[in-house]
Length: 275
Ligand SMILES: C[S@@+](CC[C@H](N)C(=O)[O-])C[C@H]1O[C@@H](n2cnc3c(N)ncnc32)[C@H](O)[C@@H]1O
Image (cartoon, rainbow, N blue to C red; front, side):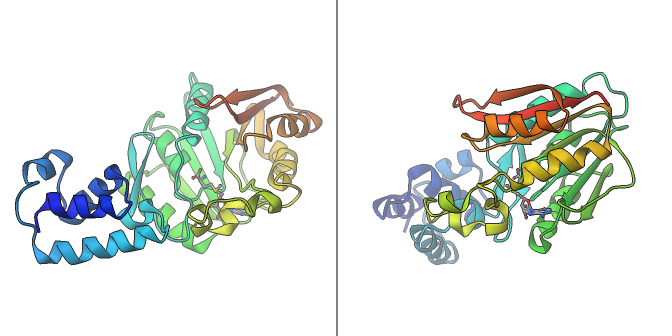
């Protein structure tokens, strides 16, 4: 079979064209342009059979990103796979805001809670001065494997990785800025998720108290390890902006703001701590 025939066959089976293309590029180790150049060449049997297996797996709803083994976030490739949340473009809004707030700080001390692949602190480390110090905190053994591999891939020598439960963690230092994209899906909402999303780890998705547990506990605990004039930034579910704003205000944060993502949904809540 030619690459074109393989591609067409996958599309006929219901695979979206851009996904079929990404899977072929991934298996053949070809760039998009190289694949197009070779589109009418015969494809080696060592490619045909594994490609058909990937297509069959994808048809079951297994995430494309796990099949590819990596996914892009903030313009950088991150290793992903079973046991870790796939970075979402919505989270880039959080990174952009965090970077803005670090502007003008000579050696910002930044902590990211619930780090997963490490996409937030690793993306920040590529843009902050070398004098910045970043800490990533994650509980899951499986997620930590990806976090460590991604930190190594992007040569993040100024990133410290901590395995801890953020609901109890008490660091020895304080930070200028804390970011967190915690689990925030309520038990009810979990019932409505697409099967594909349910392939991702439950502990990355679901939170008690109608999805608000991490926001309630962290907006209290983080006060003790934020520096004066520090900032706390949360990614939130699209219906959680007002509730998280109220929690931060109850805990003494000022200048609390809700920021929308590019789809116009509430996505980030941030607040400042004067102390
Ligand atoms: C929504 S995911 C976010 C992952 C990553 N920050 C991102 O934006 O793609 C939440 C992460 O929190 C981790 N997590 C869940 N409960 C935790 C806890 N109690 N302490 C530390 N990490 C936790 C999960 O393993 C998961 O990696």
